[in-house]
Image (cartoon, rainbow, N blue to C red):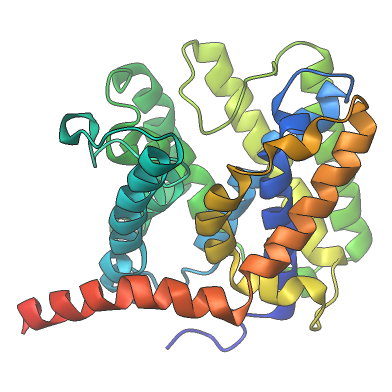
Amino acid sequence: MEPSNIRNHKIDNAKGLFIILVLLAHTPPILTINNISIEFKMLIHCTIMPAFFFFSGMLSKNPIKRADKAIKNLLIPYVLFSILSVFFNQIRHGLDWNIQTFNLFLPKGFMWYLGALFWMVLLLPHIIKFRYPILIASVVSFVASLFLQDAYEYCALGIAFSMFPMFLLGYYVPVDFYQKYSKVLFFAGGVIGIIGIIALTMNGNIYFRFRPHFYHQYINEEFIKFLCFGFATLIVLMVVCVLPNKVTFLTTIGKNSILVYVFHEYIYSFIGHLFDIDNDYLDLLIATTVSILVSYFLSRHFFVTLYTSITTPINKLLLKWEQ
């Protein structure tokens, strides 16, 4: 059985905060070049996805059980919502359906996260049998950037190998880590992480389109990626430590963060016109408000039911085949 404290309010609150930042990162004020500080933008971009792979690892303390449910919880949603994304974009843009343009092995929209996480969950029970699994994952992550150039996005394999060290790091960090040391220590570490990413940006090591999970053409960018992993980990630990261990506005958002992530693509494709105001900082205020409201809306019970109704029939069909 999984430890009873795996799903605690601190982790859910932290996931709620970071999924709001994910939605904020996908708004025009953060995605485009404007007067908003590049350091602020890169602090978000270099932290949010490493944070979610870290949390996914932290919530995989029973790796065999998690791997057994990987098809049901990750692969099936990946396939279904990839297909749905294609249909949605075809309808929205008034395009004719062309089966030749559809390739399920290339992630659609934001589905690369589910695909990459699927491979990580499957690999976890095997890699932890070795000595120094994080070191092994780091070497593989580094080497994969050199040899998966043409297949980096194929089935999200390149991203899975690239981000696997963060997932493993989360797996080995105890869920109750904040009880073992002083909050001041974690707060200081978080400040160091923030300063580190800002310094890398100011020094030109992190540029506008740099993302830890993107393919990196040059070896030095891979070293920067690992620095971002370290700084992002310090920030995540600080956020978990300072957030309350009780139900808050963020808790349900965090518990249902995967729903927010999956469904926000369909809503965000229609709200770009909200950011037509000729004031970058007012646009940022609107974007932040929209990100909070959409995260809250998509985490409600209706979308839990909708998500289940989409994935359950396929899961039942697979269960019959297994029998």
